[in-house]
Length: 185
Image 1: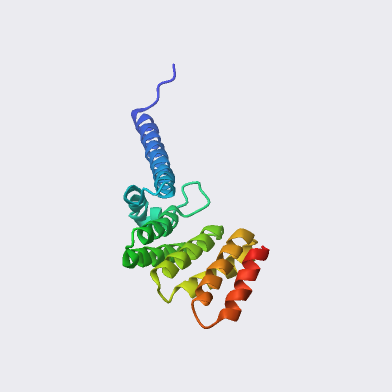
Image 2: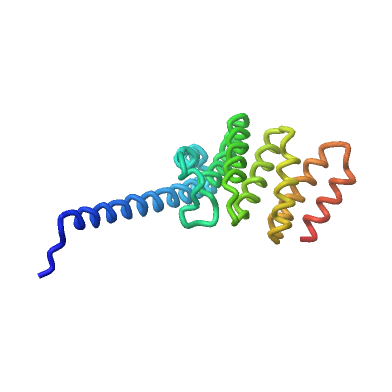
């Protein structure tokens, strides 16, 4: 007869509860992120914003967690929330979320820095749509990191973004250079 003492049984229940809470949080965060992106892709920006705001609101250590994915979910959701707000014409909020997403990605200092490069590039896109001065800096930082990581499609996207920015200024030569590079990739 194998009878577990009450204390051991209670510990097993606690461990099971912890695993359930952890697993359900993981599933909820990832599902919320993907569902938010799906709504954004369908042009349902208000629904996307509602979902992505949940992950942006993650607090404490969860803010820097990947939840089994490649990207840090609060930063990733924040960058896409910024894009959603820019689509809605809410540029001040968009820029704020883009900057917060970049700060989270940089603070996390995660060895898988691909998500940081994506967040920086999205911040560049949002800043460019909103007409703010930060766009070139975000694109350059994303370009440097993406180049270091061998992320050619993202490098091309950054060159395209920089080319578009330079096309609207007196630096047409730089615009052509960036656009040629983007096209060649």
